[in-house]
Image (cartoon, rainbow, N blue to C red; front, side):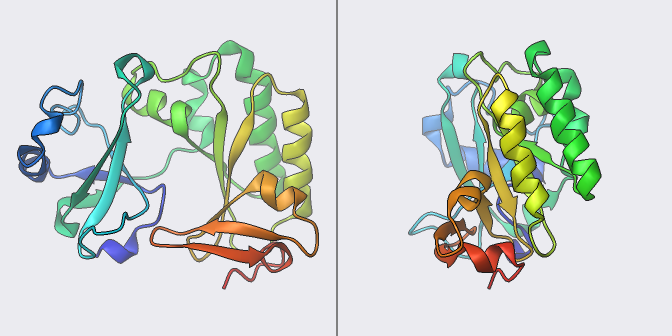
Length: 219
């Protein structure tokens, strides 16, 4: 069912369904890479639903590389046409990282190991790792997801801030909560005990007290 998937989940698509949905999108006929995307073994990613989209379909997306217009393509697929793919850990993507990122990437991996967490890339690093296409540039951020089952360890936010202070790039990303919501780590770090943060779900946005998020109470 579509409800089983969360934002940022990677999904493989049944080739016949991919051809069928593209047949209804003549605007994508000349878009680079799109026609052969699934045949080339590339996944799509679950995105937030847009108003007016059929609730029974799975909203997915894929971005094109900067050299091909950096277009973000959104599609909807029937639930039976997709299946989940294992997420990539940051350690899986070392081969795609620019040399200047090595120290920062190793520091993030080490932070995760100390806290029993496995950061996952998204954004340009994820797509370059998955596709082999050139998504990364000198202006790219290092985007990471940090899945958390309960309370947010204070050492995680402190550690991320310390890593970013030494990094050659912006360190962006989200803390992924047990209910599937995601909150920007920097917003959570700077909100203060009485502050609020924006939590993004696949079907809604919600303002929550930062203190309740930090304590592991996402609802």
